[in-house]
Amino acid sequence: MSTSATVAAIPSSPSAASDVLLYTTLEAESPNNTNPNDHNTIDPSYNYPIWIPWAICGVLFFVIFIITSIAVCLFQDRREKSFIALVTSIVGISLVVFSIFVVPVDIFNVSQTFDPKENSLVIKILYYSIYLILLIFGSVIIPFAYFWYEEDPKLGENEDDDDKLFHTIKFTLFTFIAGILIIIMGLVMSAISGTVADKNSVTDWLKQLVDVEHFGDRAIRFIVGCLAVVGCFGFNIYTAYGLSALPIGLMKRKYLTYKDENVVDRRADEVDEEIDLLQKKYRMKGTSMNREDQKKYDRLRQEKTELENTSIRIERSKKSIIAKLEPCMYPFKLLIGFGILVVIIFLLISLLINLIYRTVTSKCGIACGFVTEENCYFNPLDLLLTYSSIIFPIDYIILALIICLFIWASMVSLSTIGLRFLCVKLYKLKVRSTVPQGLLTSGIFLMFIMLATSFMLPSFAPVYTTFGSQKYQDSTGAWKQCALAAFNFTEHKLSQNVNSVTIGVPVFSIIFYFENWLFVLCFIIGFIVSIFKKPASFEEADTYDHDEEIMKRPLRGRSYKEYATSSTRSSMSLNSYNAIN
Image (cartoon, rainbow, N blue to C red; front, side):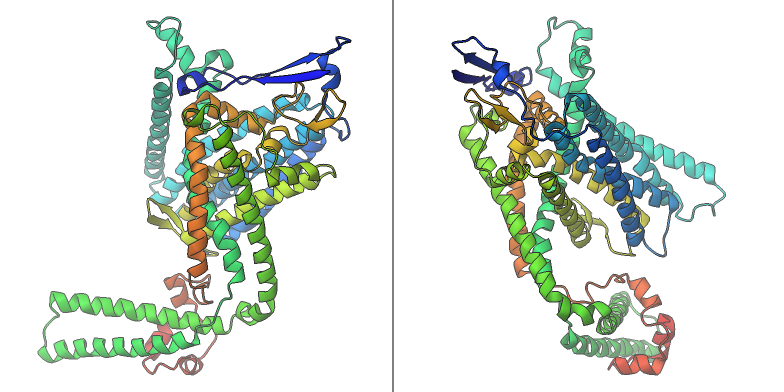
């Protein structure tokens, strides 16, 4: 028996690619004229009840919700609290994280259940429902909570609640309408090059625009693609840097800057002397300061406050429990950091192999974003996940750990870099110091990053995320890993979503391809920066780095004599102590 597989070639132009669907045909010749399906079935070795993926889904959502609630409550500012912002952040971030953890469940459904087609439609609806909920959260609910808190942080204390509600709804509608207009403009631009039976028929053009025949799949693909493209920028900046900074940060040893304390003390004395000179100068004259001296005086006062805060951080770090346990914890942190670094390099090599393979074997080139219909069988991550699927559920645990690593790296990067837009720092993400606006903004950032992560997973392990551990029986009776040449296989809904976006709107495929290379470049740059970056000291890593918080509660319960003795600065006065406590 001889078997040949023919895969439709991908068109060379983006306009043609948007109207063509990939298909596979299996032509088998047999002397007995047997049906090719007889030797092309799913490997029945691992069949599990159909309720297992849904049980996993429910447990995952419950666990994610609990962990997210604890994390958000831990990060929120102790002095500025908002119930609306807290609940919105918990629900929004839980949905964001859950959306990425649906991927292992999707793969489990296709690879291990007895009849995956029974769950396929439900999982597709689940994906679309998550996308819709995230869109509503990102464009309506989170902006509403953000503007509500901006109007009046102290809820319930203002009598003009109607005016506050009116302004909040006004700004929220403005954000929502702006997003809708951008999506409509993109849909119109993407449909201009399309072909319609009657060019003069507005009705036919509108039907093509929203893809009425397929229940609006074109519009959904475009919206999800736009959100994923925006998320790719956050994925490249935050996740790429986090993956490079996370292991290096664990392996670097934090240090106590006792020498810096003397430098701070000397500079504080110099600032006090300069302030005294300015005050004596104008006290003797009996006049007010001129503009230049007033600016200098204000600058010196601000520097003095910063030096006092730095001195307090150093004093706190000396008595920190973490600082005392650091020598014992460092060997374990070094081992964990090295292990994470090996895993990250392994993932990066898999991504590079896939990108190079696509570039070499793609028949359509840059016109379709180097899409290829051939499987890369020497991708290390693909091989690991495929062979580990022999023993259930090792492959799903590995995939879940990879997703957790991406989330952890993104959180570390958000905490280190801060919430920024066009290099402008909006808010900081610190334990017990994140304002409600920062929590809401971090929810939007994570929303885009996790959506981009789901679109990036097929780039790391394309075969496994498309076919899972499915196998088919060839003409010789041997079981092989599923490929496009296989006649009978079920594609994961994640892979279907990504392929429908990239093939249906080819410009997205081009963007995602170059975004993958940009991710590699950002990782390399972040890795070099992390190596040469000075490790954070304990006072720099102090969670109470908010100046006002430090000034209010640096060392409660200590006497002024103890406080003055702990700091060698003779300029520390009783007034400073009273102001601090």
